[in-house]
Structure formats: structure tokens, C-alpha cells
Image (cartoon, rainbow, N blue to C red; front, side, top):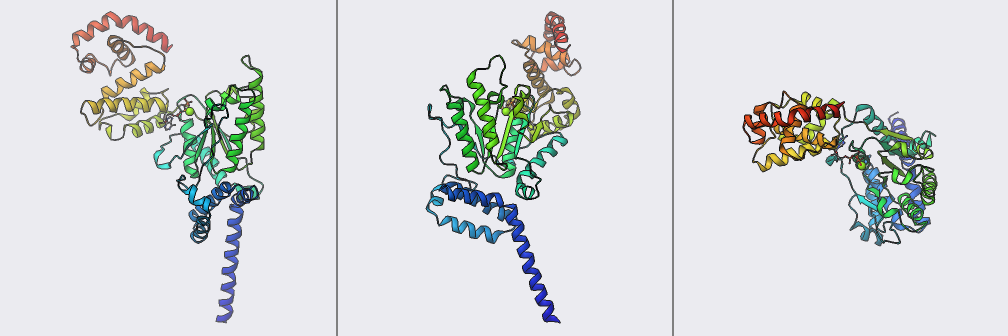
Length: 412
Ligand SMILES: Nc1ncnc2c1ncn2[C@@H]1O[C@H](COP(=O)(O)OP(=O)(O)OP(=O)(O)O)[C@@H](O)[C@H]1O
Ligand SMILES: [Mg+2]
């Protein structure tokens, strides 16, 4: 009886190992195909890159033994030794695509790390983003079940809301290098060269494990037929559409734009995942302030009030204000940013972002007083500007009424 039990257990374990193996095989089918493609095309760096990626994935899923075997096999190839010197997380990026005219690279490579990125987004948007990362990670299993969407995401929203940061976050989560297309070198003055450059970039991205990122996407994908349209732009849009269509579903493409309304209508449907990034609400503003002020935040800071006063600000504006305030505090030998100084910086940055030029201290005083009369009392303003309350009263009397009217008009 004991013997029969042992045999059954042995068979069950074997079956379980086989099932685990076939599951792993399905999950990593695209890496296997890419390795095969690299071998058939005699593109050893492609085969090597995807084999390294496969080893990383197997290791992260508990397949240490297979990962070790794979890496040992890879280290025996001469190319691996050479490329290991210029690769950090297993992916070597030699021979980047270049523009033939200028000889400059048409992509920039970066390797974002998750611990360096603090992304603050509304929960619904964050959920969509997580779904995208999960679909990319499990693309092969989903494809096997006929439920995969192409790994392409379009990010859109106002300037400074974190679109580029989101692309960096995606690359960091996937442990892949980020290849940002350089529109300045990609768009060539030579007729037809732009389309050729595009093709090279897309081909390169299919042969390298990476996230291909088209930032300021409207520069390339602007609608055909608008008044500044010329023949070359039409050709670029057509080339872009063709390149996207030819892209394997599992090549990760992320595009970002401030002007989604300018995109050619044919572009939108090529992106199965779309991420609208809005201005931060009060909760997200609080999180952004807390992140950027860090240990420079004073104990008595009213976060809710700060978030309310900064409504309409972008993440970029919060970052800029905090750096500015921290810089001033450090230079003044202080260990925290005092609330009046912080609100002053916020007020001035908000004025700047609304196109209001405050070129004298008198104008600043009036702007701050009209913006937040209770916070910026005569005493606070006097302390901030190193003047007497009498002087501040004079400034406000001279300039206050006039600038208050202007400010009210701008708010209206
Ligand atoms: N949602 C956010 N979460 C965290 N940080 C943010 C966010 N939005 C902006 N920031 C901060 O502002 C900086 C600029 O953001 P980013 O460059 O990603 O904006 P963008 O939307 O790409 O702007 P643009 O449209 O001008 O290119 C970031 O480095 C980050 O520090
Ligand atoms: Mg950007």
C-alpha cells in the first residue's frame, strides 16, 4: 500500500512539474519567439537580450535553477561578455538608431528605477495604469486565451501633470529601459528621411526589450489636412500608422501628448489603452506637497488649507514651488520652510503660471494681499519683505486698488 502511495505521489509531482513547465512556457512564449527570431536573423544581440530578459523573468517567478542555467549558457558566448559591459539590467542597447544626415541618435535611453518615482494619480487612473502593466506582463497567457490587447498606451492631459513621469513609471515597473524618441533629430530636413528614421526606430524597438516612448506625440501624429499641413507631414502620419500596424502586439509603445484633439483620428484607435491624466485634486495635491516638502515641512502646516489654496496647480508647479522654497530655506540656514514663505512662493508661482508678471516687490506685495488677504496681513508682509508695516500700508494704498481690480478681472 505504502509503495502504491509513493508511486502515485511521484507521478503527481512529475505531472505538477510538467504543468508548471508548460504554464511557464506559455507565459514566456513571446521571449522564446524573439530568441528564435534573433537566431534566425543572425541578430545575436536580439537573441541575447531576450534570453537575459527570460532569465530575469524566470528568476523573479522562483525559477532560479533555470535562470542560472540560462545565464551560464549566455556567458559562454563572446558577444555576451562584450555587451555585459554596457548593460546594467540585462539589456544591452548597442547600435542605437541614428539620423543619417546629422549622425545623431534618434532615441534617448534611460533606465528608470521604481524607487526614484513617486507618481500621484487619481485612484481610477492608477487602476487603469496597473491594468496596463499587468496586461503587458501577462501578454502571452492572455494571447493564448485570445484575450490580449496590443501593449500600447496613449497618455494625454494638460502640461505638467505627470505624463512623462508615467511613462518612466511604466518602464520602471516592467524593469525595462525607456527609449524616448527624439523628435528634434527624428524629424529630418531631408525629404523622406523622417519616415526612414521612424521605421528604423520601430524596427529597433521590436528587436530590443524596451518601452518605446513617443513624447510630445502630436509633433508626429498631428492631423492630416489642417492648415499648416504639408506633404511631408502627411507622409509622416502615414508612415507612423504603418509602423504602428506592423508592430508586434507585445512590443510596448507609450505615447504622450498635451493636445489629443490635434491627433489624427486614425491614431486614436491604434491605442487600446488610453490614459487621461487630469489636474490633481485636493487629495493628490496634499500627497504631492508632502512628497516634495519632505522633512522641510513645518509641524504646524495645515495640509488641507495648502491643498485648497493650490487648486488648479499641476504636479510640476508643486514641485517647482517646493524646490524654490527649500532652496531659500537652506540658504537662510533654516531647517524647515516657514508657512508664510511657502505660501508666498506658491502665490508667486501661481501668478507666473497665469501669465501675470510681477516685476517689482511692490507688485508682489499687492498680488499676495489680494490673493489671500487674511494670510498676508500687514505684519506678515512686513516680515517677509523686511519692511515696516507703514511702508506696506503705503504700497497697498498706492498700488493695491489698481492691482486688485486687475486681479479680480483675471480671476473672472
Ligand atoms: N501626477 C504627478 N505625480 C507626481 N509628480 C508629478 C505629477 N505631475 C507632475 N509631477 C512632477 O512634475 C514634473 C513634471 O512632470 P512631467 O514632465 O511628467 O509632466 P508632463 O505631463 O509630461 O508635462 P508636459 O506636457 O509639459 O511634457 C515631474 O518630474 C514630477 O516631479
Ligand atoms: Mg512630458
